[in-house]
Image (cartoon, rainbow over all chains, first blue to last red; front, side, top):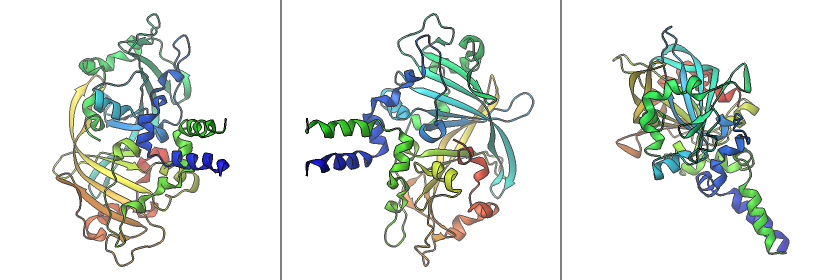
Length: 186
Length: 186
């Protein structure tokens, strides 16, 4: 009888709903597992499979090309945001940029994502952990990875490489939250 | 000593990565929990928090309005698809349609999702479970829920209410898989 108890508990644990697991498991906000002592940021793995979707933006550049920018957050991020109105320390956001294609379907001409361009990674840092590292500041760690070398962080300064595009969103912690419906309602 | 074993196993179980949990837990493909004996389909809950993102399409209708159609899949769906080239029996897909807004940002004019219009729900049925139900056929169960009554299924016939838009995608099991990058690589 005694030997069966662990099996029962394992079975119970595996049947916990995913959203309960997210809220119970504090390691959902484990972004600093991706950061070494000097503040160097590694790219999170399995983002498409394990992160939650926040939203898509479709910017059209001056050359006429339309991209899709898809933002994912580490598990549990939106639930926390809806409760506290901000992202938890250690939350990881990943913005994957895509080239697009388009065609006419029965509901009209539609565009969709094709090849990945780059990944922007942000890690919420409420404690100003790396004041002397040029990739940390304004409450976040900032990183950039490109499709031709997806695990090589290539940004050198968040102010130079990242912040320009975020300035219009300064009042919402540098994020375009208006396009992320899950932050308002599940 | 014996009494500590369950705690240890529970701790181990809670530290299992989410993607391992998905692949081990067969209930990830539990779409038929949403279906009653007659084949009536209920809307899955917590989709934005717990499902995985497949892709976004941005159709522009004949009235010039551009929508965003965001498709989510039940947990583990993409991992299974990458392995077997098809969706598992019981997989749930949800397409949430959004109205959009747009504005000029530093990377160009960009569009984003605002209010939800409808949710289309599909449940993979490899066994032709409901041959006499007009909401089941072509390997799927089909359902439609609208934002003004989000839990009321309003489709009466998948051929009349759903299939028209899917005809161009017949060769890929009625789905526009070309816009779902996660089905090709994680």
